[in-house]
Image 1 (cartoon, rainbow, N blue to C red):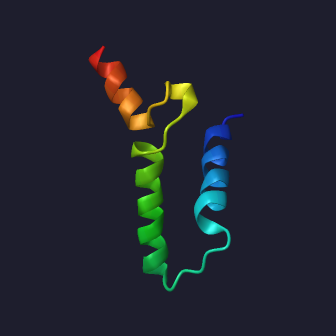
Image 2: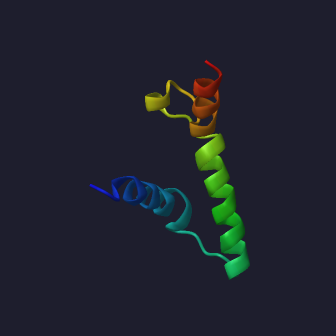
Length: 64
């Protein structure tokens, strides 16, 4: 239960970004990982967060 959020994130990361992909180098993998984390935090919408991204929801919560 303590690490459930991270297990969920890494499971999603593997399914959406990693499985079936071949990376040319470690640097290519790191770049793609950075892009995925940016997407996960800034662009991915969540129904639990009223259809907003995590960053959008946090920003909205702080302004109200």
